[in-house]
Image 1 (cartoon, helix red, strand yellow):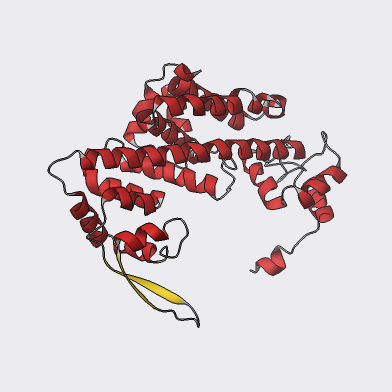
Image 2 (spheres, one colour):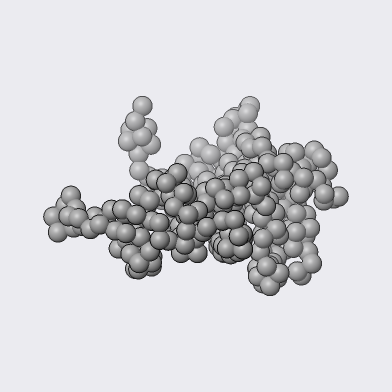
Length: 328
């Protein structure tokens, strides 16, 4: 089997034919010509069609294999909603990353039994992959100056002509507040885990779910492309967090938290409420509520027959109201 032969590149005209004739996708709310222009200039087929996973197919009869009540405009609208969702998610994840750094630095520096320099040295000794990452960032215009100032670095010729490589020889003179500025979000979580261990204020499995969502939004992935259930299992803290919401039944909680995108989103809300300052939460809640309670409802009739999309939306709204309701 080869993708080159089984899935050859198609023109917009051929893609429209495939959607209409083979997939059963209709064009009631836009013309096929406008759909071709959209696929050529606005969004490619792969990303637009990704949201079809939220629709069921006929399993019998002449339409077997075709989608049930799926219009091209529904895919367009889901793609647009996902774009707005990604934008605010990315900002919320940046808020969480900053709050984690502030808390970690505060707790370490206020702990008289901990030497912040020794903590950094021990962490990097245990995690040499982080050191290798830092070596690639020595020439960065954003972090290079800090690394060169607080790490002992050896410069040597690179493999390619007229290039150089950097080797970190020592890191015993770097305090935690400097290290936090040059680590990735994932490595901040590793440092957080290294310091707190099983006494972490926010469980590391929850933070890893937030990191996964952050990576998806930062890399412009389609976050809402597959809202199906049974793909994940929630950490206890997240499960207990939703369990307190009276308007959500046990079966709803269990079902929706088994949906990976929903689990990651709720994990973000839990973390956000736990660690981000009131002032930042107040500002960001306005953005999130505007997307959910205004923008997502603009073409709500598109999704009134899709129980999967509709029930996930309703579940998310209940959690948002519980988490950020006081910041209206």
